[in-house]
Length: 326
Ligand SMILES: Nc1nc2c(ncn2[C@@H]2O[C@H](COP(=O)(O)OP(=O)(O)OP(=O)(O)O)[C@@H](O)[C@H]2O)c(=O)[nH]1
Ligand SMILES: [Mg+2]
Image 1 (spheres, rainbow, N blue to C red):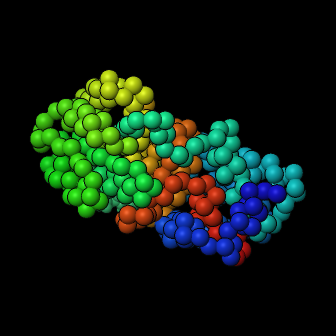
Image 2 (image 1 turned 90 degrees about the vertical axis):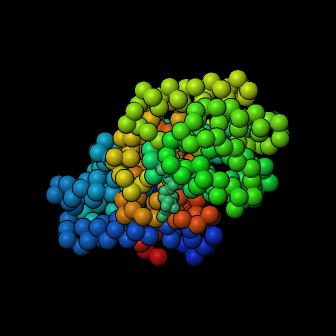
């Protein structure tokens, strides 16, 4: 049984809260993708080279990423030849299967946070300005708190005016401690205070905000190196996670920024925000292709519980349910 049928069986008529979040959050992407695929099928009586050219364009327009599109379309062509399929209305399932089998292929991607076996877990949040780092920290802290973990925040973005207050407001709302320094001060010394206080207080998780100045790459690299050194001194296995936050609405540009970030520091996972704001949901596949780093969370809206653990099957269903004939 192909992935397409498995997902159909799992989801159709069986809605869950997570499932509903994905369907609602991916509405723009799903409508755009399904309409294009359906209109393509309606315009071609037979599958031919032009059909495949158009299919390639649709996938590229959905931010799947050029290399990945070539691989996917080659695989679809093979299968179509093998099964001798002529009618474009009969290949929706093959399109979906190939897109995601290639995604899931050759690596098991864990979406779980790598918590320390004992003691403090330190999480660094990195990413360019406006990607959604600070709001994601709040959403993550809220989620961890609900799971019964104690959380502390460290306001390591001392660069942008108002950044410290923004994090502090979230901390107060969530009723968790937030370690702060002065605006314009040394971010690493805030991280130092954060780690020290988190250890003393015996909290489970410290989440550190950072400034996202990629324009000044050497500066950012040094700053992140310094933060890593300080964390390791007190938490030898830390930081357990360095999560790179990417704004999905920035498309291939966002993917390129991610590639740059992965060159300057070790990224353990991606948080893809604002998926609800893009019609190009294929960006998840592009990230996999360009970076091979797991997408651990996706932002499906602005509310606290709109940050969801990334789940491939829910994602496929959210993106492609209109093509599944329900
Ligand atoms: N619709 C939607 N909006 C989001 C999502 N995640 C974040 N945002 C919004 O994106 C905007 C920027 O978020 P911030 O968290 O301030 O981004 P940042 O990366 O901390 O930005 P800087 O501190 O300037 O570097 C805010 O208005 C958030 O509400 C999401 O998943 N969906
Ligand atoms: Mg911020």
